[in-house]
Image (cartoon, rainbow over all chains, first blue to last red):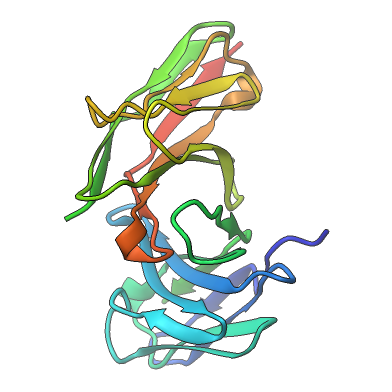
Length: 115
Length: 113
């Protein structure tokens, strides 16, 4: 079975540009999560969806960040405009459901560099 | 609020040495506890989990026991291999947080031949 798929794997852009990160969750999973990983702050949950509906977006840093899940097999995280401090590895994860015992399966990540 | 604290790394061991990575947590309810591993350049993979007190999770020679009395979930392995070199993350998921995982800061393990 295919795991969580993310694209692109690497993105280098200039400050002020729009960046779109993409994620395809594991088929049949109802919950999708976006995380950001940096050396300074570790792993942070940005937002998560259940059945395509955003449930908790309290981790989204500011209005420059937005996330959508138009259907069960696709989600995007958009940064507009991007800033150098957004440089990080962004992970998408999915799980069967949103219960406390559910395992989250992570994608390989997108390494974003904003110059 | 909920939090997870791990021992600081990096941890450097020789092959076949015994490994312990400490993890303690703070939670108001009854969380599930997880250990994830991240190999260089990859995403996180579930290593093991425990969903209630006194449960022991195990996988690939690694073990961790959910100790409610000490709020701990220490990771152990009796004999590490070079291939175990990675970053290890302890995490909790508390019932009232929905699907939200709270991660520790990660502990880097380096195993030398």
